[in-house]
Image (cartoon, rainbow, N blue to C red; front, side, top):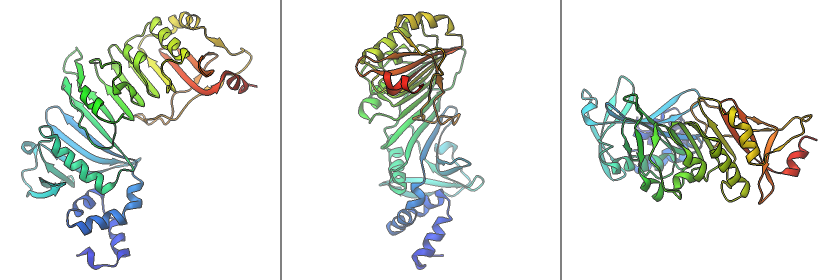
Length: 359
């Protein structure tokens, strides 16, 4: 059946019913076919919020490129090293952004497989990414997610990359220190979000673009004092080793002065033991102010810059009587010590406006 023989409305109806990986394959038929897909599916592609690249660098190397929806995952392409590829299916070659790449079909799982050593040749990955971005467009976010056993890790420099998630597998009782290439951050646009589930992280320079990321979510990280000193983004969620009272005092006083954390909206620090014992020391040291006990404090909550794996759309609420005021503009931040959590929420209100909310 030749789609080109049908009227445009029939062509569009046929393409509307096709899965994304089949549209991807069909786009290689000709330039006119690719143009038809891009034109007829513009509204459909515009509804895609994310295209994810999920790779595993453990016993084998694999990469899945897919579109996550609320109730399903639609695969575009999978990439496997040739030695682990499907040897029982016939290979075929496609010209992907000027590079010939071998493909096979996984008829059992109904997947398209690219047979390529991605981790030895980043230019191959870039060719695939550039083709996908040209076909599907740039209106959606492109995310990089990796599971790794490696100590040193290179994040590929892909155009329009919005964020990356890195989960480090633990081979022993001792976590390895992860080394991320500073060059990636210095030569790429500032990321929208970073998620790290790691042991510890080799320090960056204080002016690194790593600290400029809009949203940082770090789990089980040894150390972490550098985030409280150098972070320049909007939201930070830190599951780290225990911070001391002096760490919080320094952080709050720098925010109050207006010399640091100008974009900060929300900070949460979680420890596996209680912060309660240092609450009074910190609040007294930073000159915290208090809402009248007979009034009900307003609740601070914001949409998350990056909705992570628990799918919560908003930051955890902060309802606290304690607050501090920034010297430069009079804006307020609520402070809450609650069991194992420290939360700091910045209001887009001056102290006068903030107090008026409870009248």
